[in-house]
Length: 120
Image 1 (cartoon, rainbow, N blue to C red):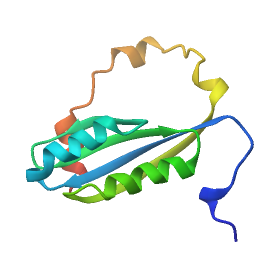
Image 2 (image 1 turned 30 degrees about the vertical axis):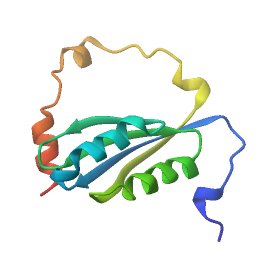
Image 3 (image 1 turned 135 degrees about the vertical axis):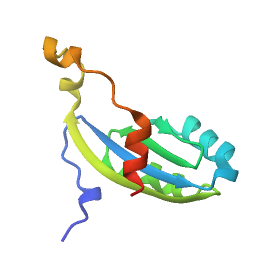
Image 4 (image 1 turned 30 degrees about the horizontal axis):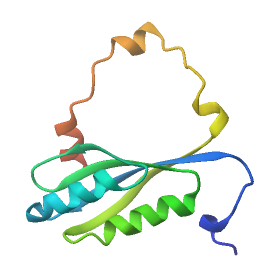
């Protein structure tokens, strides 16, 4: 069986994943520096205890996995776990999406609740 990470579909794609990263609070500076400087990595949520929610975007699944492996190698990182993976053809990423007034009326999620649920 071929490794799914190595399969090349031949399409211009973008792989978007969410990652929960747990790190030691005393290594917060190094972890944040690593996430800020990593290509395609966005730190979405974080707390004082060393928990982070990241979004990683790359043209291939292999590149996404390389970013996750690089984050796992940062001193103080206890774990970096992919929790969702979405692949989209690049041509569709630039299309505008019309949002309904119902969606626009929703409030932003409480990030503290998201983090606390990820650790229970």
